[in-house]
Length: 528
Image (cartoon, rainbow, N blue to C red):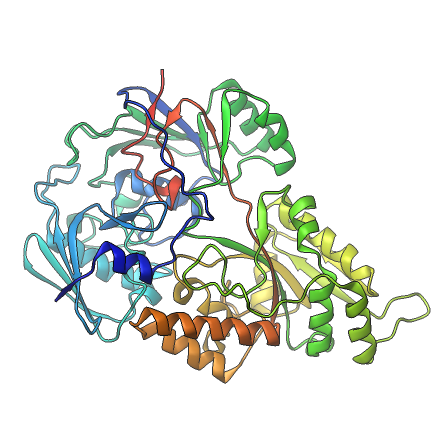
């Protein structure tokens, strides 16, 4: 076995947090107090074992920990694992587990819990089915050692072992029906906070774990997680101090200037690079217009990312023109093919493609189905409609509820172009491959290869990168993927970022991890 050093892991993972990895807030930790936070919508379950809903990933780690955590520079830190080794062939991952840890119900934490959790995640976790697909066994030579055995290398595996992505659950709570286990509604974990109650439609209450393995922590007495459906009510709760912490852009971006003026509040953009979101236009390549590369190129030249950043995201986004987010610094190619804002070039391409303007100035008309998740998507749709109208493409926006959008776009494929936001996750194999791999063209399954894109060379490169243990070669594969996708244009990647946390200035020492809102909060305290 070869010890995987911190330095080598940093090389192999996406390092850096948008250049914002600043030191955590200085000061002496203060014990006591209640952190009131708000998430929206209410989570469907409180453990991220079988569900990847954003709200679930925010609350689950407060109770249910992972093997590792990662700082703001994506360097690993021990959690339930104190040390780890990876074999030279990348097929065995050996973890030394923390001793003296107990579950909240008093049962001892052992390697059997780790092995059972990995097996459950492989079968039931939406991303774990892919991330852990190569796992053939989890060995437990003693109660404090777990060894994951793979059939093929998985160079992204360590990055997946956070509390929110790969939670370690108590085996004795999941011996029967996994989906129906009461642990999803009343979780037992090893974390710094103990679950007390979930009043659906109102709140979740967590209290300090007096037997936490890290002596003296957590600093907080309790966390109250509230559900406030109305964005204006969330803003008022933040302004009055009724709520101290609100992640995931809890209010419309247009309201941020007013909140910034409140001296009791601060805006935090760090802590979101573990799941960086890229906003994009995705073409239906079977459409009679968008099947033409020149038409797709024209659309790419018609959109102005600086205008999108300013008008749609109020300056809280940045350009993301390639197939891999710039937040994944180890794999993002800044020199990938670009299509800069150039309406004249767009007009010429459409003329050359045989789509002249008609008497009414319109070349052709299409529908744009925007993701119905927030008003930002509607604003992005409005911007796109205006931008394409300037080059003679008539766009009709379609507003619909989420189930209808899923059915129209991914099941019926009755769309021309859609806009969506896709997480590129902590590694391109996990978050990006699904969007461009022809084998992931799966009508009926959301957030897959919606365009119907197929390029055999891209397939080969993605498949090679998924098992390549040499990080330099893996980087080359992903650079080549970005080149092909940038030339083929099954989609137009626009901007990334735009996610932020609003928190009271009393909230200290946050964020310290790359998945900030999904941290355990063991290190957070409240200033007097």
